[in-house]
Image 1 (cartoon, chains in turn orange, purple):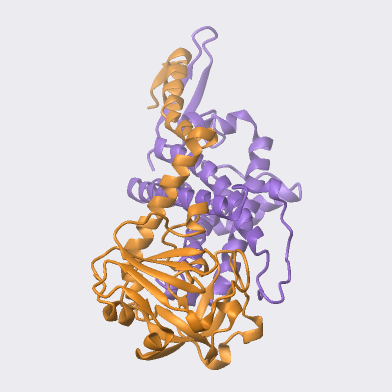
Image 2: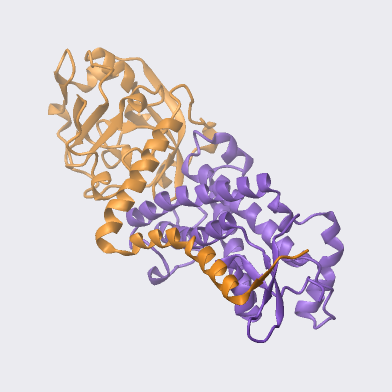
Length: 239
Length: 231
């Protein structure tokens, strides 16, 4: 038997059901300019936190056959400023500082003396395109051990000859495919691709692969996370 | 499925109308939150797409569509990514809440397209598009509606799966592999968005055609005088 109510009672029942939906209005906070920025910042922060917990140190990025490589001429040259910041190769060193036992200037020869690795990995740009490149260099993890870095520190921060700057979380810095790269396609790095030394981090998006490295710092505190990160991009952006 | 029903008596005229509680609170909540997040996800997704509006190589870049900035959310790539990576969690959250609720409450029977609905698809289709006779209405959703709602729920799940394959092609390499690689995952993600937008377009047309009595139930839950209750 269907219960019987009068129309006034039905109206009040309906109204109560409608009012239950008022929490949906909270989404309107995103429409208010002063609230939007902190909310989106928090959202991106949450995303980065989730990304960090999805990262697996032992999980390798897919590697590809030589036949799958993007031709070197079609490997985009991306920079935020200049293709060639005019690095003087003869006087170039990587200046190491921060939580390390052996700070100072390291030459390319010293870095090239470390075990050499080559890998064909995918380079994914934040814009959405990707290329498969061949990269050669020393593992950043080997270099960090050489300089006696505190491997419990949180970040590896780098600065570049073109005033670009970047950071990696320590787990990513220690990943076996994270290289201090001085070769592309078995040739010494060209100036527009970041000579004499760049980062290759296949587990990260393109803007993390800083070129023309000049400084490296092991640190627990980041004053600046990275050039694009400070414009509003993700700080972690792991693939 | 036991649906709540009442008979409403007009105190002045004595007229009696039936009403049925069609949409439980969780379904209504998820519907409206999802309407907002789907709008933001599609709008910011299109702004992200603008950064590389192609599914081919970077060099040379063959532009597929020059999507207008005015029909996108976020203003620039970084801004759009902030919107996308914020609302995705709301989108996933309501998706999980909705699916969990539907399964555990048994309310899924209202929308799930099952074998016995198949025979009803063509008569309903004929009625809508070729002026065929109106098939008898037996439940809150007709077979074509169930087909549409079930499809869009599957598309919703696929939008998240393809999204993860694009966002995390290494940590979820198996997902990207299932979709034919990173390139294809990005294409699927894009196509699934259009399929969902096509659903929304049709959905809105039907809402307009069926009027307020059909619209209010998604706000209050209660539908007055539903066709499937015999008078």
